[in-house]
Image (tube, rainbow, N blue to C red):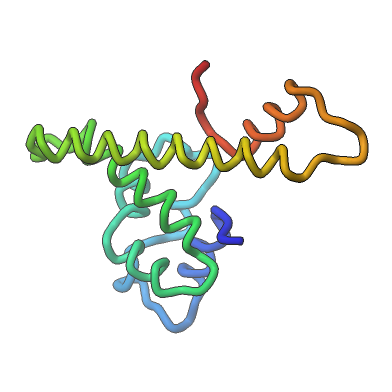
Length: 135
């Protein structure tokens, strides 16, 4: 039941037990209208944020999602990453995403609705939870 949600990040920002120095985040970092803000992306995948999410209850989905994002940055953007680390990071992201896709396919067929779903309906339901799937 570990979901991926921006609410987990909002809770970190609003939690009185943490100060900004604990996570370096501001409300503008999670503004859904500013999705191409690379600086905010880097703040979201910082070790501090990931450690706080890892330690919280029911935030494992968001933790895994942001860890995958961090590995994508490491594999394709970070210039200091050597070729071996790039390959490992890229492979891990592909592996986890394929595993996630397979899990979504299997769980969606296990819970059929009262009306039988067509293959297209099932794929649309899965695509709702999976960001980018190439055919």
